[in-house]
Length: 406
Image (cartoon, rainbow, N blue to C red; front, side, top):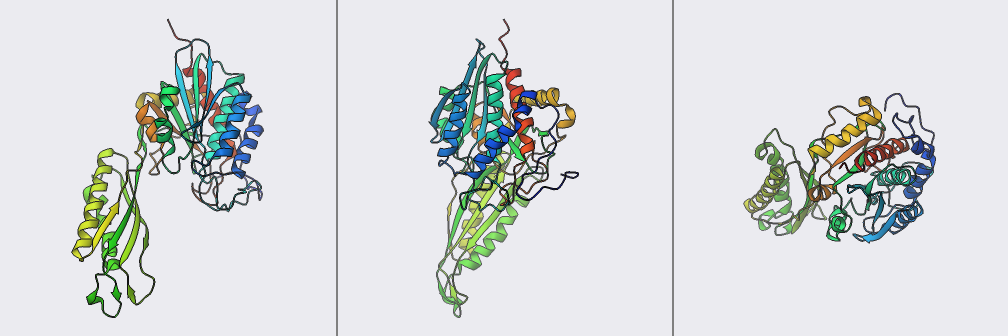
């Protein structure tokens, strides 16, 4: 972010704390950052977050929460019930890391080779834990708070597994909220999106099967490389010619492999691609046209296409009422100047979408300042975002969990 001072080697960037931070949360800022750094040193992949889950559960128990572990494999739920209020609020953080070799130069960089918190889930967890401490010790709430620490967001399977394990039956909520840090947005500022906020994503694996042969006598073969090249080109027409120009769709071929030698035509070429959209009907169109083009283009060259195209996860669609509500809480607590105007939907994906299909709620964005992009080996979560984001969760809980009006 322009105007910030340089960062010394091995240190994370910390901007000046944002206005609106609750004093009790500000007083524990260093403790929250220490938790984040500890989690960062010990990243764990999807459904392997045993140390992370144990640490989260330990802290919640120390602070007086009723703690349930093992939900969805390695998920944790902390429940805090105060008073007689009937309202029930859910707040969620994701806890898993990525298979990326860290190149941040931080003093607290990953100690596990090939794994890294490159999406800021360590920060999201620290944010929710900071709010949890405040609400347990200082919170003025009357109702039930459910804190959901979810595994396996990066694989798109953690939220659905927690739901299948009875998340909302065992820990009922009237509304569910989550957040994600976003590089490029001012640190500690908030972004809100009505309706589609993040894209759906489906992964496809495509095999183009031909007939191998000698490169000097291609007439005796069916060249899958030639067919695959035409398929990649044809797929570029899907969004431009099959999707309404006013809607969003993305088809990306990210991997193509076939053959070993310059003078040998292989039998098979394999492609891997992703398909993204905001609207379910656009998603269905992309899936249908990708399949048709792959099969028909391969056939035109005498080859055959086999496609594995499981459904990934849907788009994050924020509910209007809940989005307006959390935006109001942010404006009241931080001022309108700390809300990013016209924050645009993101084309990345998030399995919080499954939670929003099951319960009303909203997915919020908090600025990470001028950092490397998400999933970069040089990405650094901005510690200065913890206190304002934790304060937003605390303010939301105190505003929402109020004594029922007779």
